[in-house]
Image (tube, rainbow, N blue to C red; front, side):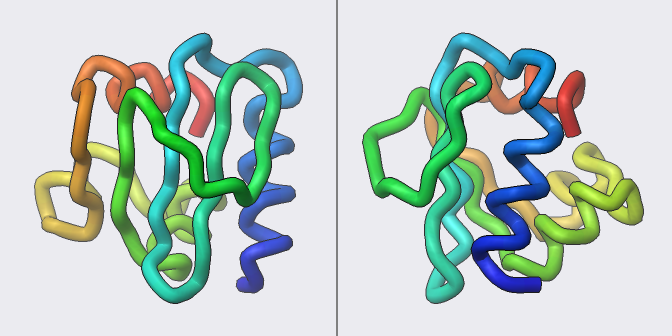
Length: 93
């Protein structure tokens, strides 16, 4: 899945309202997805929480094929910054 498709997928998940805090998905060489509230972009900005994972794993997360807790516990997702912000993402992904 391309960065544009992943960005659109995240945008669709937060269309009805996201979370107040800022989150950055660091997809390595695939790019960055930054979200705050219902705003989603590919800017590399400072965030309250940074989630590092592969683009394929984010695609699986967005489709529901990958459980966020299982991804974290299995090492497919690393969280830097405010862990409570990462926990709030469970309500939108």
